[in-house]
Image: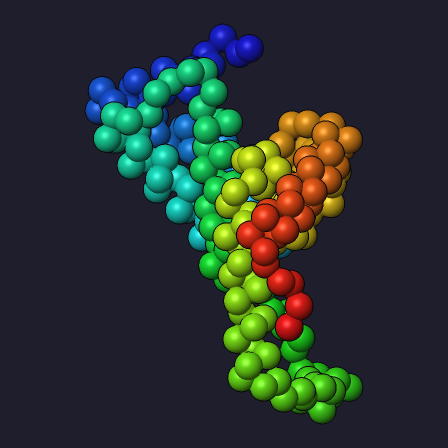
Length: 194
């Protein structure tokens, strides 16, 4: 460790004592890791910057309010906030792929237009809502892997790295998440077909 290195906890204490630059040092120290993590999940620089800013706004507000409890795990706490905000984004947003028009490719000419009945749309929406509600019943570790895999489009290797577990553990959590979802579907008598 460098001789003039100041711990995260000391920076937080200094910030509480009125030393504003301590907060800037703290943010700069962890900016790259947090931003890279969010960018890897959302794959959009502007969106990653928004989530990064929201993360540190939440961090700053929590520290200012005196609600932050130091347990020697500041960066893990910040990463958890970033992760949760990213998952919240995926829950709220319907991710639709976009393809720019070009001279060789006109999106409108290549769209397959299908007309769904109102009834079909309502049934599909109900199925999606039911599945989203069921995901909330899963244990946190299983829910996290499921959301990162299906909403974050991460590989199991990336999930393992981000959750600090082995690939086999990530795969196992996904397997149990799917088993538990099937049980919940049967238990709640949900029909998953339109």
